[in-house]
Image 1 (tube, rainbow, N blue to C red):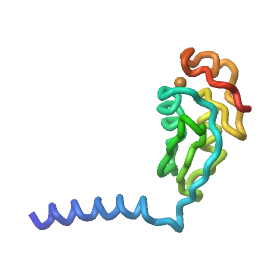
Image 2 (image 1 turned 90 degrees about the vertical axis):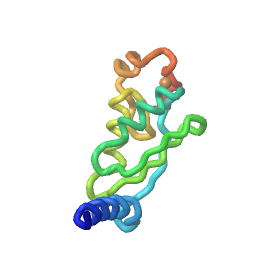
Image 3 (image 1 turned 45 degrees about the vertical axis):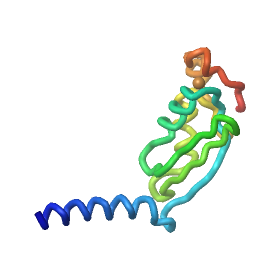
Image 4 (image 1 turned 90 degrees about the horizontal axis):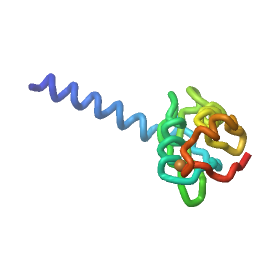
Length: 112
Ligand SMILES: [Cu+2]
């Protein structure tokens, strides 16, 4: 029983570290083209690559807030992955073919 409690506490501790160690995380914001809630899901899924801690895309402002570990991943890596999913970012333009294959409701105004 004591052993079980210890194992449980240990995993909770690791999780806390991931989110509170500010020295190793960086938060940036940048614009990402998108339109609806489907876009939000797609953008945030594409942004969640290794080293990304938290991601939130605001449908109204088109601003993505990204918290990541800069020793694992860069903002450019994340932006490239978002563009590959069909969404323009400030730095990378999505492939026209991928953009065209998005559902009609997702055809946002291109920003790049
Ligand atoms: Cu959409």
